[in-house]
Length: 117
Image 1: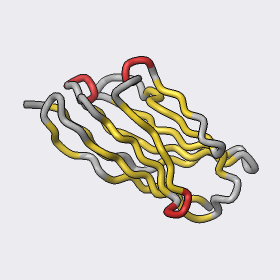
Image 2: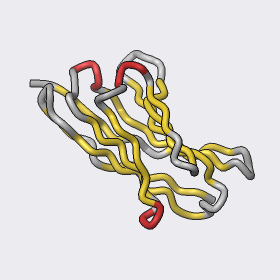
Image 3: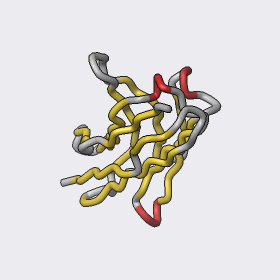
Image 4: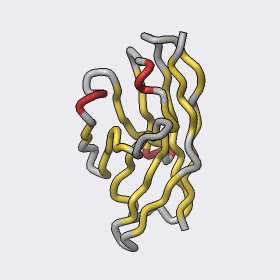
């Protein structure tokens, strides 16, 4: 079994920064990729960024050059550093871990990010 726990959300002014953390624990030996998704009110959940075991990264166009996904394998943690935040970044941010062996995905409970003056 795999557990996913996010933290680091909060209220920030436009132009500010936040760093989200996602701790993946349990049977993680076959976790191939970890992703951050977000869901704004009355909108569909969208993929924001992904990072694979090999370190390859991908971003949705709207966050490129502002957000950075990274991983610390010693801490079983994936980070999402968000700079130059905009009101439209306001959403609940979810971490998702994909187990390539079982072909199952695991979601965290989400962390709220609010960008407002």
